[in-house]
Image 1: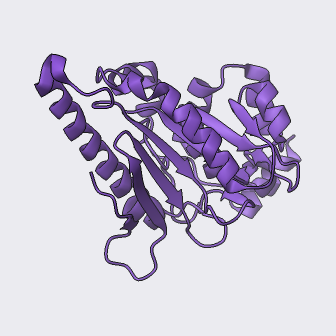
Image 2: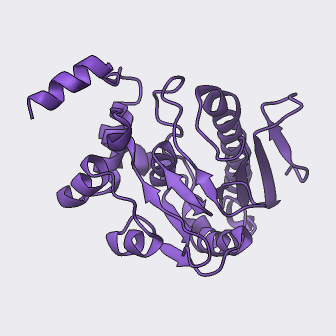
Length: 266
């Protein structure tokens, strides 16, 4: 188990992601790409995906070691959970969306151990999809600083990557909620998000650490579900419709002239 933090991209003087493993069964990815963690393609490919690869590799080694021990396996061996959190020294942003000019794919695949999004601030566009890709979501209650979760592309004249659409469909089952999220671009307060089932818990206060503490409690309550090695396998089938769209081309946002033409027909 690596005790020291690992920074991504590897070898850079200005890392945008830190991976830690505070216990043998818990990994933490902290996103700190600029002020608001915009999910550009380089951020995804050079930081998020390599960090996930490290977590997967370390957990698989732990699982393999646990299975090799048979009945003598320790109580924590084979367990695993991952928390993804925005920059921990602030409470304004989890992620402020996706850089559509440089990224068109889903930012993170459905992962092989339980994952918890610790939403410690605004969670917009691609940031919301990143959170939905996680199995559980814990969010600040916005009591001392506003925090919203929102797909705001409709207000920016941007279409969605197909992977975003399919992720919404498999993670949010209500058609009226699809309309409110996608076509109205509603900014959900944490309380609204909890009622709608978009988040599992909200946390009072204005501290990112309070959100992290709640996320850790939740992660540790489900980490044993990874021990059998079936968590990821079940999710592949459960979310197969979404996964199949990850590499499909997406419709680009309309040019201003085309957008104006569409408006005249409505």
